[in-house]
Length: 194
Image (cartoon, rainbow, N blue to C red; front, side, top):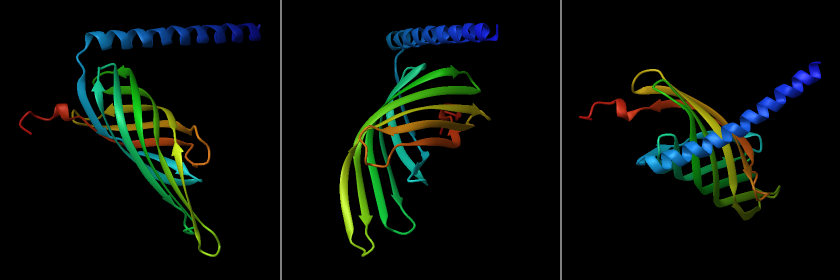
């Protein structure tokens, strides 16, 4: 009996996922055809890991906002240096980003992002004699994540998110989870005389 109930629950859950996917495609199509896009830009900072050490990833994204979804181009960079100075890595990449807004009202915004990029990883390794070996790798990071924002006041909110990044080409040490946490500013709430 319990197995049958569990099987029915899984069946209905899978069916709702397929129905939701159709809803996403329909809403993107509707807003793309019926909404004039507005320019959108933001700084995009993330916390991630390289070889188990916490690193900051800095980015800038610019693009078109269609209210329910947005399309961005982004530039990202980060660096890593081990405590013993034996490893030094730097990463630069450009990304195409798609963002879908599951919930968007005055107080809450829940987004899902997917992005794919291309860039370079510069890796330096020092051996025990202090000699350096350099290598450059092409990186193709694929990222997917979710972000929630809560508007505390009309111009300021808090934001947090999680995601995962996979480097399609191995050997760059760039695959890792990431998370975000910070403040969100809403410039549309400021008076027009600013």
